[in-house]
Length: 348
Image (cartoon, rainbow, N blue to C red):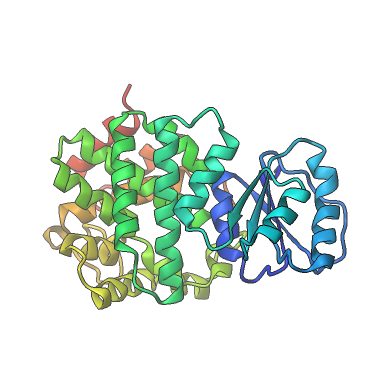
């Protein structure tokens, strides 16, 4: 698959968060400046460097890595750890299209990249997608680091996702999200977008829509503490790895309870989105009325999102096929909600 973004860095271990952010625009390849130079792919959309430009050797190395690719006319974003006039001049000398501080927030970084890639301006849904992605990234980064979840960023994302649903173009939202190369962020945005559209379709008032979209956005937060090597494994998980992944509802539940301030329905959705009405789900094996309507809706959207995503071991299902799988889960999913969901994903 052609890469969309090339990241040149002298600190590949610390640049994992940046790589995941850049994958919003498609597959991201990382070049370690400390390794011998070799020919590599030319990105389709953007070049980014995260390098200490106070080091003369590093400057020359970046210049050499950029030379061939810049000739293709690809925009180049230079991230500076020190925004002094000297280093800003250095960045301009190596033909940076734009210069930003390396510690810029995820939201501002993605917005600036959006402006670089679409100087004529993004359409509203693209702006909403960027805002939602930034909040998702901040949320998972904080959870992985053991920091408090950024409530304001989460609320901004919920607002962006609900406003995208107001455009009544679910297909456009799903198409943008599918281009995200980070599987965890992609799935979270798919589930949140589907849930937001589901709530809008059912005519829920604004406060209920915010609650439902928030529940969907946070439902997989426990995966932030699951090893990335397992989450992004190129192939089916072993039984042992599956047991580790199945810990994420408990991890997420404990995380939200420890921080406090989250609505009961949101906490329940995080803990119970793998429960089924017939008691065959996990982690509690709940049945019937023990499972709230919020959880039932998020569960339907969660399963559908997984089915329409491409996985390393199978192709993405078409909407009709994915819905048939849901319909075949008789007794596990709420039949009334499932019929209503059909009109969301198969409107014709």
